[in-house]
Image (tube, rainbow, N blue to C red; front, top):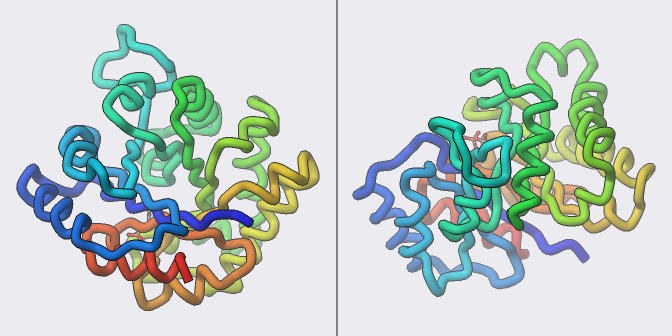
Length: 251
Ligand code: 13P
């Protein structure tokens, strides 16, 4: 049985004081122990969140990390070894906002994935298609290409300790959620692609859905057989809403 997971990607939101409030509210939530829960604050606030959530079951991750595992001359970057040192357990790699705005192509994403794992972090690999790719019937081709690139470069065994998030770009921050069936179809295709390589790893890996997930639609999405939880953006900034999504994943 796969444990469900709910991850809150706070993106570039927050100040010291708003994050202190969010931490306090998160600490008051009744959360299901059957769900792995993590939040991904902006890097600057990771220490505040790690310290603030000490003793709580919510884990902390980073939204990005460097292509190199260890410290070195890489101005402006943060190495996954530093993130692990700061108390992170996870790191998001290949988010579509970074692929599109920072030009992070599959080669960079794959290096970041490998560097993160080398430092003991669990990568949350994001894949997903743009609206025009869906409309032209290329969704599965795009997703399979992104996944295939990583399998080709790093091998299948890396997925024994990773999470994959399917996030259709047209569903991110738009209020347009994929229907549970649309999401399930892509998740099933991802699992089939992985199982053609190694069935055991394919059955064990968590596949999260991301894109306008809210308390109101979470339960229906999470009831699909290949959706093992969610990667939540906007709704994760509201502790009560986030708590409800976590409880939906626990049912
Ligand atoms: P929203 O939930 O705000 O659509 O964002 C999804 C996302 O990009 C999470 O990584």
